[in-house]
Image (tube, rainbow over all chains, first blue to last red; front, side, top):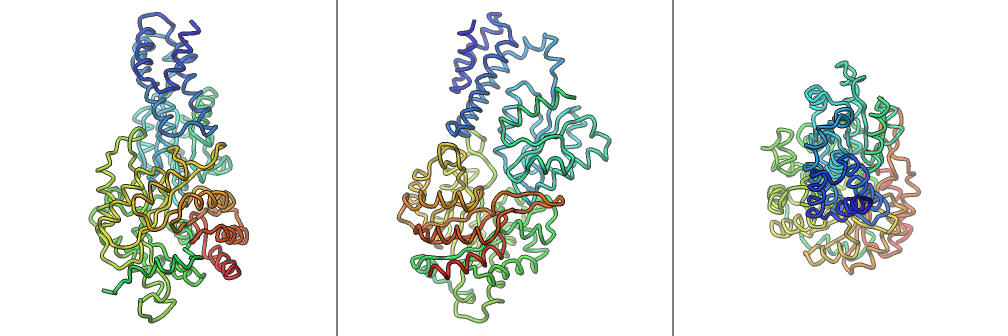
Length: 215
Length: 307
């Protein structure tokens, strides 16, 4: 059993898609409990990739491969998962994008991929997202998390506008707001009335989970 | 059209201690650029502000003025409904820089005295696999659209803030194909526990040798790190190539004061690090995000001390 989970972890960490799909197939066939395989196997691989990123041993391409493999495995397992009560209880929908005027996509896409890999239902709006679109998508998907990235001092104020607009539309208490991007900080998140700041993609997933646990 | 001596900038670069200007975006915010507006649109709607910022840098001692065209690729502008303004906004950016310099230095043979105009081109925002789905021809077409639109006389093309060396090479290829101007290219490196890498994992020597092979006239690093780390990176850059090297650090990390983003570093500290870069054999320096005419003025003074 432990070997099986270790194998799942390693397939994601190494970006080995074929092996991950084969293992996911065995999960569906009942060889391993689906939630255990995800939490202790595949997700552990993503976490390990994140650790290597922080150490400067993995870079964007390696993280992208690991995240893609994780997503592919999740697709295979999802039908089994949907049958479990746990999945409904854990339903977490995040609307994510880089704010208007800012085309920086990397950090945001990474957060998006890692959130998906961690079982979030992610609505990725891309980069250069008009402020109102965040509001519209929160409504459309009944989201409980908004993640905004801004890499420029010229655009970070857009995060503040979106937070204000969520409040104006009476949505603020329904969603948690997470901000990130090079010029942002804890202090900035506090000042604009966001719930939290994350320093990188791995951190963002950790914070997102905590925010939704608390709500 | 003004005659451009294409070797003028390269000759100046040979002499060393060239001073570029500093940040543009942070200066535009200070002048009221609203959140989420494309800075390049001001070339048309607020030309007096763009000209004034350039002129402040000229007065501060910058020899190279970088145009307000960093994000003026066809697809980015189209995202703002400015798809038909690619040629207009890019050419205006060069004209405004030239006009600003001329307004300070007065009549001269070159039109801009001993100063230079660098036409700025940034990344497209499209990502190649495995991170994104863009193809090399998608990205190449963006650079061709922007650089190919240029009629106004610049002194060099400055490709800046590239974090994927493959995209940098596509920009370089377009610049060499569509223009006979000298081409500078700078890459954004992050400091990891294992040293300096691009976010894609490319090392400093690898990036530099690929850009040299691609035909760059000037190579270097900008953005993301402040002057202390840039100084450390500068010696790596210098060891990696015999081409002229440019370093443009940020002004420390942004902090937020009363809801307005600003940068914490003092200009004196920036200037002393910049002088140390020249000591390492770096040919040209300037500032990136958060640096202001005050930073460049301090740098200018510290360079005169070096000279």
